[in-house]
Length: 559
Ligand SMILES: [Zn+2]
Image (cartoon, rainbow, N blue to C red):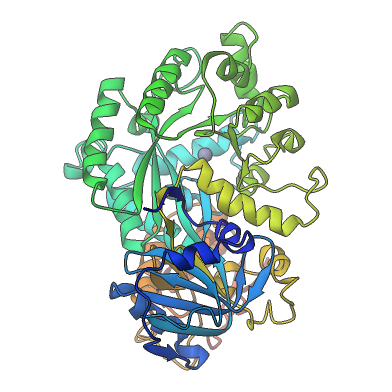
C-alpha cells in the first residue's frame, strides 16, 4: 500500500534525486510491452496530451527536460495512472515494459505545477485601480483608501461578476503554470434582495464552481469575518457581505461545503480568521482549536500594515498581533500567517521555529507599498516569497521555485494518496527561453519569462489544459473578428468588456477596461469611444488612428 505522501509539487525531485525511481518502478504493477510510442510535430503535442489526460487511461510523459528539484534532467519518464496520480518515475531505457501511450515531448520541459497559496480572485476586478490610490478627505492616499475602492467594487458586485472574475483569475493562473490555489475567501453573500444571489454564503459555491470549470486544484480557505475593525468596530455596508454571524453558522456552512466536496478530488477546505482586526482573539482561538481537531489548515492575514499593529497594541495592552498568536495558540505546520510585513524579527523567528508558515505576496505588498518582512527570520517556512541577500541558498531561482511549489503545498496541506500529476509544460524553444541551457533554464523561467507565453499546457490530476491562446489573428475583418478564438478566450473577453466602466469619470478607470480586452475582439471599441469622449469633454483633441490590428496601435492626444 502506498503511504500518504504530499502532492507532487517540487517533490518529484526527491523521488528522482534520492534514487526513488526503483521504488516507484516496483510499485508499477502491471508491466506489459510498449503499446505505442508517439512522436509528432510540436504543434500537436499539447492537443494530444489533452485527449490523453481526459480518457482515463494511463500514459507516460517523456519530455526533453524534467525538473528534479535540483536541476533539469534529460531522459526522465513520468508514468501517470488513469487516476491522475504519478505511478512511477523512471529513466529512458528502464521503461521498456509500459502498457501505456508514451508522449514524446521534444523542446518541452516538465515542471511541477506551482501553488498560489493566497488569492482573493474577485479582486481581479481591481486590476489597475490599486495604482491610482484614491485620496481621502485630507488628500492622503494609502492602503486604507485603496480598501475603500475595493469596498466600492464589492458593494455592487453580482453573482455573475464574481463568477466571471474568479474564473478569469483562475484561468490566468493556469496559463502562468499555477495548478493549485489557496483561495482566501471572505466575500460570502449575494446582494440583498437579489433572488438567489442574496442567499447566505451563495458565493462560496460560486468560487468552487469557477475552480471546477477551469480545472484548478483549490483549497477554499473559508473566512470568518465578524467586525469592521479592532474593538468590535461596526461593519460598513459592503463589509456586511463578508459577515459570519457565529461559530455555529460558520461550521454548519463548512459541513455543507464538505459534503459537496466529497466527490471532488481537487477541492478541499481550510479555515480562516480574516485578520485580528476583523475577528476577536477568543474567536480566533476557538476557530483554530476546531481546525486542529478537524485536521484542516488555518490561515490569517497578519501585520500587513503599521496601523493594524498600532491599533492592536491599543486594544490589547501593547501586544502585537503576532505576540497574541504566540501566546494564545499552538502554532504548527498547518498554520499560515499571511504578509507579516511589520512583524518583529524575534517574534517572526519564534513563529517559524514552531513550523508556522509565512505567506508573502510580493506583488500585493509591492503594489500597495506595504513594506518588506524580516525574511532572514523566516528560515525555510516561506511560500510564494521573494528574497535576495538574506538566504544561504546559492541559486535564488531554485529557492523561489521551491517557495512556489513544495512550500506552498505544505501551507495548504495538499495531501493525497500518492503524488498527483500536477504539471506545467514549458516550451524551451520559445523566444524568451531559447538561449537558455538546462542549467540556466530555471532562472530564465523565474526571472525572464512571461508565464502564459512559455507555459504551453498544465495538468491537474493528470488532466491537461492548453494555455489560452492570446495570439492576434491578422486579416480578420470586422464582425467576425473572434471567430477563431477559443471558447475560453472568448469568455474572458466578454467578462472583461462587461466590467469596463464606460460611465466612469476617471480616464484611468476607463483605460483599465482595456487591460483585458484584446484588439481582435471588437469589444474594445466601446471603451475606446468612452476614453475619446472623456478627453474631448476636457478640452483634448483626440486623433483616432485606424490601423490594422497590431499590438502597438496608438491613440494620439494633445491639448
Ligand atoms: Zn489577502
